[in-house]
Length: 406
Image 1 (tube, rainbow, N blue to C red):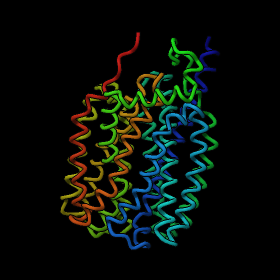
Image 2: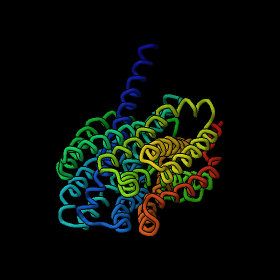
Image 3: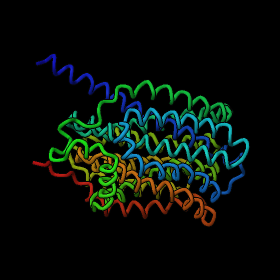
Image 4: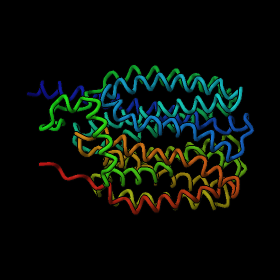
């Protein structure tokens, strides 16, 4: 009996490590790009609104990928999906690394492909993460997202170092693309199957479950589920909070507080480190107090951090605000994904729908902040995030766990 248990446990441990690797590397890639946004902006002489539309390319690629991701993962599996997206992301990062020297269009095309890879990769690794979470029987999804945040912190710190030593954007991003592709392709070989036999609905024929037409009907039906749509809107609010921080903190620090590029990137790293801490310690709070009260308290913390960041009289106060902002934003996205995957039989389409709605924040966020930044400064434009956090507090009841089916 003990030998059998060990044989079952070992693949789960291997799959857990593989999921961590997928989350960490995706975060590392995204933050590496984000850490060089100020230099790319200066090279291309972009105003805040034009920069916002350039950043929109990532969100556009993700939004194109996400509605397809549920079917892609269901057909090819999470392992092959993440592998393919790692290759696409490597090509995209390489395109941006060279393209920014020639103009805006190559950067936009590269970022669109980056966003496409990011969107499908995100759904696939969350589906596999939900599988591991169910097999372990405890809340671990926030820690996977903490892994993503660890990757973002590492990417931001490496980016700050690259800026400080005047390493070119091209060399920096080329190295990032190669490292991410190699690590991910090697790691995800340990992903387990996306469904246990017990997860398949018993009264549905196997051919109906696997047929493309059946998967399409299931995905379309998922868009009509009130709970799923509300979770999507909840995730959208937190995605907006997180995404605005990732895209604009460095620029806001540099333009609003007059700090150097390296210090602005360091504030970005503080924001990401705070999110990492919240996601690492979050599972204990979720198990003890429940999803709804925890995310509501954290939303209030994030609002307080934003107030300090925007209205602080000195850069040190803004750093404290960045810390609270990131800490408060930490659990909304991963908890929303866990809520979408509560029913294993419908995890892939629901995660796909929730991610699609959530990623609309990344579609609208960059141009909105850029437009407001042209009129009120980027720093004051960040007040728009507070409105979305109020929405998140109101929608938090939608993420209550589903009752187990009997």
